[in-house]
Image (cartoon, rainbow, N blue to C red; front, top):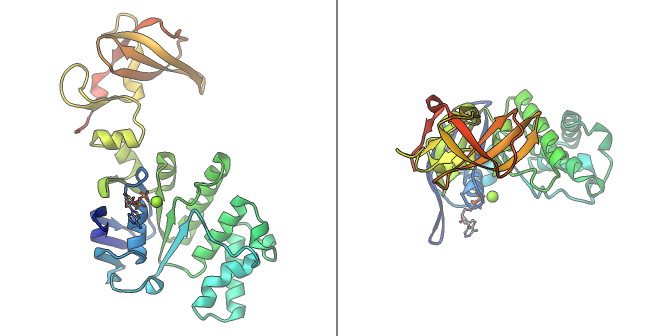
Length: 318
Ligand code: ADP
Ligand code: MG
């Protein structure tokens, strides 16, 4: 099912948490919303789910659900704090939402078992949820969120409390499972890596407003503003350009070590990574730094010359 929001606004007292957001997410699309803490990500999800009051509209497959209470919206929402019932067994936890929908016991259990199979926890159904590891609990929460077959499933920083390796593997599993089910999904995170890895398309939220929307490739190649370029981790953002002109971003590949090159500076950092050196040079006569990859082993504090391929310059606005 497709989802669109129009002019969606959330205020808490005098704080405007979400400022007239318009977004359209296609059926089956995996959509990420990335933004720093306080940018309005959770407020957006809560407004879509109807948990906080908002103005504007929320439309699911052409039907305006803005006036419906939360439980009548065909939406699943999964949080970082997944709130399983610790003394209830795994299969009953997954079936819980179905019970609330008035589905009979046999059908609930069959459906819950299907979902446990999907998340790879078929053998865990009789265990108490409280006796599982963090990653296992998170997969139970995923199964519980998906069991009622929501039209749209939303994830609010679901992996924040897990260690790095587990985050990566669970993100891949969530992505694959919602992809196989064809469920329209929204994944909210402050982590650009997660947003890029999860999404078919993404939006970058800044101060409650959408600053950029597009495929990960489009957003990476043309972030449009200095703020978005910083948020998504561009390595070389020069607020005043290279000496003249407006702000630009230079990809790693646009900069190279070349004695006699047009720019010179001092090496301030060099780390060996993936078979090459990631080097940062502080340019002479400015506060700007350039980071690039090279095969050359450059010594910290040494003076070097750099060549810049200005055809790769990405123009930005402030
Ligand atoms: P995010 O999820 O991106 O961190 P939130 O949507 O939680 O952002 O918050 C957006 C803004 O709204 C922040 O300035 C936050 O302090 C404020 N805010 C969030 N929830 C409340 C609330 N219940 N009452 C007052 N202000 C809130
Ligand atoms: Mg949040």
